[in-house]
Image 1 (cartoon, rainbow, N blue to C red):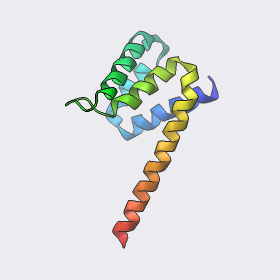
Image 2 (image 1 turned 180 degrees about the horizontal axis):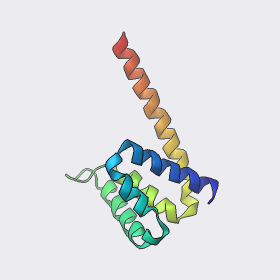
Image 3 (image 1 turned 90 degrees about the horizontal axis):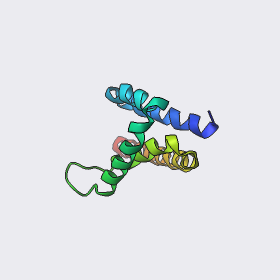
Image 4 (image 1 turned 90 degrees about the vertical axis):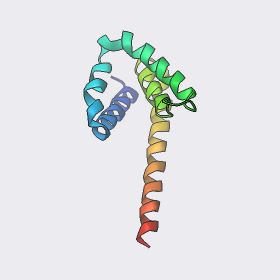
Length: 104
């Protein structure tokens, strides 16, 4: 397993910890035997994320679809990891700033 692939799997583990109900599904979908389900599901999630302005579909679908596709396309693993870590840093900074403003 490459360094980038290991980072991607850690991201999936983090999602599973944040949303415990999804951890079983995420563990199953990451298995090599689930590739025939993972690729079409990833494409559908990406398409759903692109059309997130419609009811029911949401912006959460795009990153999850990209994560799933990146499991099978190694050239996407590095960029997906970098964007994910950048977004997590921004989210954490935003939350800390928000908590600090509430404390004033």
